[in-house]
Length: 438
Image (tube, helix red, strand yellow):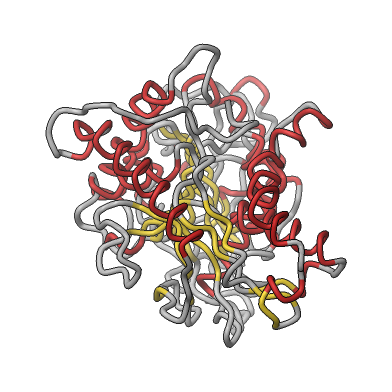
């Protein structure tokens, strides 16, 4: 039996958070009951419409009037499901809370509907979406919520929107940090590190204060490796291992280029690693990658292409796409976020691995500690991962890994004032922003 309360006002709230929430029974969620007066279970519920007072054509229940001045709920997401009165779907799991920053942007516009449909966490996994935007994007967030509402996703049980990360990140079990300032004309990489670093420092503090203690964090906003480090340093209560910088799109692009060169479909490419930074110093690893189970260098005999053109093709893919289409690779980025999540919640196929930018402390490769560096990972499907040990190196690979390591150490010095490690000093060796991300 469904019980619903809807606010009788359509005027905009000035609260830092607009709540669009269907507070499930204890079987699913209790996280947003603080936003609404608990509703008594009843066999004959009263449902009122969200309309202005001068439009009301039917009596307004007293319980709806009591909600004045509280966070305003939105449409169907105001419903409170009483599954004790309904026929329970026993195969459904406990609801999970997913926070997304930059939720009104193009990447999120593709990603949110994949999550809500069950494509990411599975067809029997109810989800709650917590969408973070800015003052300028709050109306756009309302539009996103309307589209989610109109899509009738049965797994989408709660939606909330807001501009205060301390409220939006409440009880989040996954945090997908997409929102970041793009690099403008004439802006130095050091400037971008500082501006976006401040954003991720604040979001780290909010996660530390509000999110689930074991929240998994995927940082997408660039420069994502160092932003992930800043976020992690400002969230000491959360395990450092839980922070990831997204390099999965780079991995996917590398697999595509190897497949094209070898004349095979890309599902035949495995063991692809992106080492290092999400920048032009990244290292797509063809030494350890495999095609149809064989080392790449045994399948692709053109070793000059591998050493000289392969990496450049991976790096420039985003820029070429923008020239062709006139827009950035938002859709494929959203797909790569899905891939990154599923790699953590699905057991890695035997013998294979995936790439993610993770904390280097304790790594077996000799890479400098206390940075976020993309490395090969395996997972049992429990949200955790281990670093792969059975990889090989040659002088070519090691030289390029060291260059990316040096860049990330320089970025770390540049943002020391945001990680609690002193005064920032920028000595970045060169501009390494990927084409298409400026």
